[in-house]
Amino acid sequence: MVAIKPLPELLINQIAAGEVVERPASALKEILENSIDADATRIDIQLFHGGIKQMRISDNGVGIAKDELVLALMRHSTSKISSLEDLHKITSLGFRGEALASISSISTLTLTSHTVAQRHAWQVQASSGSITQPRPAALTQGTIVDARDFYSNIPARRKFLKTEATEYTHCEDIFKRMALVRPDIEFTLQHNGKLRHQYPITDFLQRIEAVLGKEFIQSIACISEQTADIRLHGIVALPAYSRASRDTQYFFVNHRFVRNKMIAHAIREAYRDVLHLDRYPAFVLFLETDPAEVDVNVHPTKSEIKFRDPRAMHQFVFHAVQKSLARPSRKAQPQLLDNAVSKQMPHFHYPKQHTQKFGKIEQSAALYQSLFGDDNEDFNNSANIETEAQINRMSGAQIIDSTTEERRDFPPLGFALGQLHGVYILAQNKNGLIIVDMHAAHERILYEKLKMAMDSHAWSAQSLLIPLTFYADRADVVFVEENLTLFKQIGFELAILAPTTLAVRTVPVILQQADIAKLTLDLIQETKKYGSNQVLTAGRNEILATMACHAAIRANRALTIAEMNALLRQMEATDRADQCNHGRPTWYEMSLANLDKLFMRGK
Image 1 (cartoon, rainbow, N blue to C red):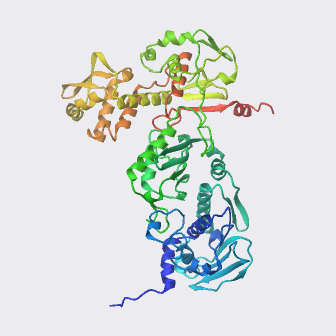
Image 2: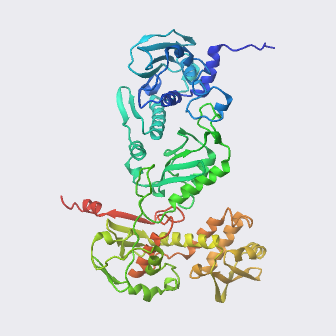
Image 3: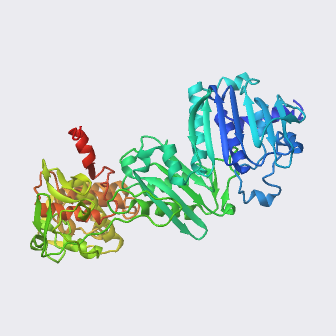
């Protein structure tokens, strides 16, 4: 049997490097964290051949003293922590003291630094386990870390590195993460001598726009929520900006980029009602909490964390994101993340005795009364679109002079012009043309109403004058017989007339004009899928979505101008009305400027 013996120091460092420095991007992350911990306000990065050949990071931080340069390249030597208590409340990005030692064991590393207390800079070099003594060097301020020829002394590891382009892409992603979280630091990135990115000191929103693009910033909802000692702020993209992958998901805890399945699940759940199929949300979120509530010492790369109370954190993140996405149908107004309150779109109220005139649109507000009345009746006994008068009572907003044609008087979704192929509503607002998918929009409105009714146990049921009977599979009839109480909880009173015959006696008022037989059969299948014990919990929203889809107005349904406007007003008052229950957009705006370009006006 082979005797137990201690490993050589170089081999120990190389084993550690296998965990900490998987690729050049891993080294870049560790060095950037050290620069940020050193209070740098400018960090310059130069990469050659994707960082494989050379990686040079310079900063203007506090620097490393001459007597500490050699220590900085030895394992478990750090200025970040000194006791077990410090490990339980990490406030710095780096803390293990392994990064530079690991990098120097797989490359040729030169460390140059100048502190304000020294007359000039000092430099040390490490390669294959040996470290030179400090010697004078030229550097005005801060630190330069220069690592060359990654894994040149470990060919077996080097062959696992990808192409130069791939390794550069990983480095660029690390660079963007750091740039996002610290807009108070100037960052530059060069590759093979060519400047790729330069981010000057700015605020959060401008930095996010610089890193992720203007399109992202134009499709966002802002978050700023706090409870006890937890704060979440940042931006989430509206569902229309959803992605095919998770490439635009940035979550930071105490300024550290992390991956956490619990947090990912909370955000995904917040998007559940508005995200289409297999699309992924985009977000940049910053969570700040007591360091003692977070364990960052879980994985060598420090990208995985654990929360002391994961359930509470899940609920906090879920509700904060859901709340930001639930704002009524409006394009998000960008705001500085650390500033006050987001801008609110004005509400509108229309006097009943005035006539509205917008271009060629003329209609009497009194017409709404004749069609809908003041009693929250469903229009044409089916659509359940609230009247404009009701919306106005909800908004309690100012009176405007409706005899003018000023664009500023348009509500956000404007006024209806007509229908297109019985599918879309065309409307005009102050910006241009609004196109609304009337079925998708009404489906969302009904869905939100059903959720509110279930949450408040305020189902309004309607008894059918003549019970509706229809054929059903024997297994379905048996299932209904065993769950009559459950169906009654969601507004359906069912009866068994025969082994293959069901009768519906009562339905929710909001659904009375739907195809009751088909809706009931679909509900039976949904209920069977989730199981009777899960219907009002796990499968709740799916079942309500099925009900809303059946009851929503269908294509080729002719609507009057008044009915179309009533639908637009209710969209403006409904949470998450920008998407239907399946995540599809419900409306689209085409600006006058874009229309002018389309027809080459002014050219």
